[in-house]
Length: 148
Image (cartoon, rainbow, N blue to C red; front, side):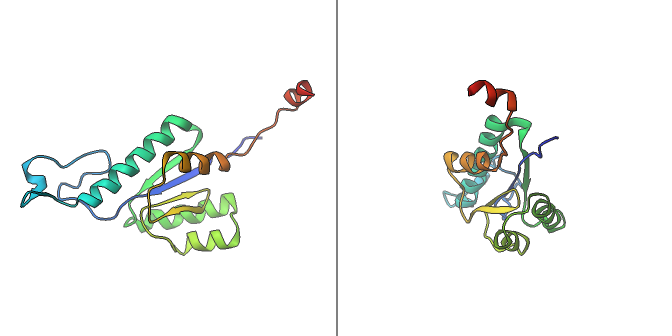
């Protein structure tokens, strides 16, 4: 029997920067300032923080987790992906409805079809704990026998 990979969906900030850079690229230099102030500094911070979450998950879990990063404007992909995860992992009814009805704010993190974080970027310990909790334990009967 094969175990399903846990699914993590990172829904990042919606507003683009002038250069259309993502969480990993930066729009820098003289053109990134307007009247001496950074353009969209709060958006840049959220994007960089979600980039850090991506790196943490890849470092900790590698290919053991299905990681999807989505711009919330991409509804043609996002809604079916959430519905598939809800169908595959069967979260509680309330969690499923919240996910499928998009009853959360951005940035958001969904794990196995359930919203775990909404309107904020989780700390490293929080996201790792949420994903570890979603990984089913596979018991090896020989290992259990040897331990007894």
